[in-house]
Length: 313
Image (tube, rainbow, N blue to C red; front, side):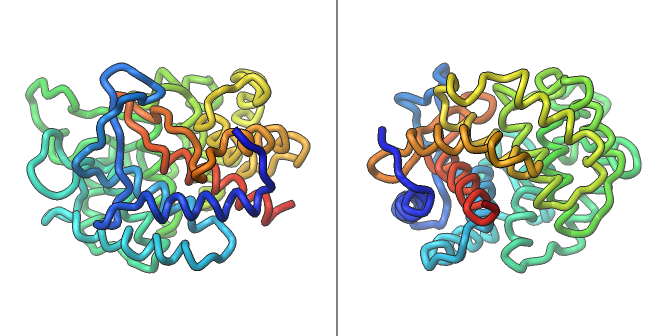
């Protein structure tokens, strides 16, 4: 472990990401059967999800030649994985183990939107077809919700998915009041886990909601943001006792997105800096169900925290 200044940490982290990126432009996703630390994890052959989060995180950093070198092939990878129906699948274009879904679709559309690509009309049709009510919330999976059978994913509503949908919608200037109201209820009732099918802890969901609020400019979430900040500061382990770099990164970004005072953010940044490895990465940890994550994901979120910190303070 080492402690460096934020500017140096950002440069070495970007160097790591540039080296870790696959020739296709993708960042590999790793999965384990039973370990949250992903020791011994295998790399997925292909997946679009984590790459979208890395692209967003890099868009929050000060200008750097490495960023464009990373983002351009990442965008090309995502564009090549679109299905004929306009959607994206978690494992990319090809043979699927699960249906296409609105979560991956919105995350990809958001990442591409930040690169200047606007979605075609097929995307809006997919969004409208998955409304529980006008303006949300939204079902996760595409093409199955009118099925009368007992399909395991049918009419599933998930908080992380709706946070990602809201973020994407915000970038497209779409107002989804129902989805925002749903997430406000999750925050105010502190049901982060009960309403979350996929996250293994509240941290990644908190990050995603704060991203929708700040970077997606979803002002309908504003009434619940003080309650979410209070949850971060009182209901999860403080940074001095948190050993997981991924959790520290999620909460540091969230506090910055909520405009928390600098003295509240400083301990998270100090702890994050001690977790950076000699090669520039931050340690991997499972971000969501079935123990999926990547060192590139932890690294990107840590860089997002550092980038927002140095630009603000």
